[in-house]
Image (cartoon, rainbow, N blue to C red; front, side):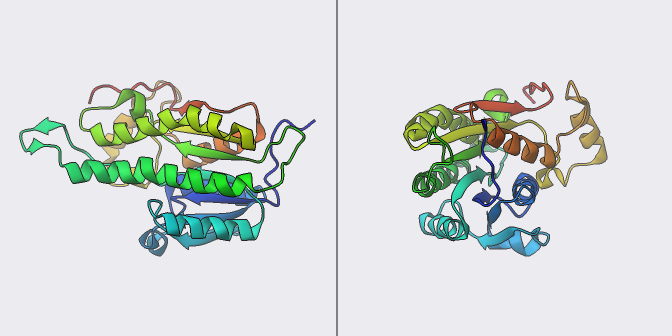
Length: 257
């Protein structure tokens, strides 16, 4: 008896698909036989690499109901939508109060809008489409939604108030979303990465890169986007994983700064 979901012949949506975790996940799902709709801002696709075979790039803003709905329709037209993976997100630095003054409210709102509300927007619209498909087994399994949080949700550092709040919200959605969608046979999981070697770290010096690597207990290196993608496929293959947050961090617990 199968204990997971075979993605072959299904369609999938991946946000933030032009780079980093999203690009690795889109490629992995396409390699496993899914037809992938990769959502990212037009600017992201303009500066990104050519999408791999099986990944269709779609310009879109995760905070836009109409643009995400159009991407969901495109995915559903390509095959039964079974998987949605939320990788789109931004980070910003700013203390609640510093010598420069109080934290900018618009900057805080923008991080919440993209990281939290954008994640929910994709979750709700993808869930509607997945729920309309035929079950893949006798238990009524229809699909999987994987959201991306961060260990900052638990170990937010100085200056991470907006980012930690947004990712804490993603963690908080996980269980109620899984419970809400259980009646439709849709699982909801969240991955909370530690320090992964993504374009967000492209500007750090070799010294900082080495220090970040050394801060990880084991293995003492930065995580790889391919490891995130492999975890998504593993979650798809294990249908008893539901309503949980998995830390992908090499046992790292972030210091205050």
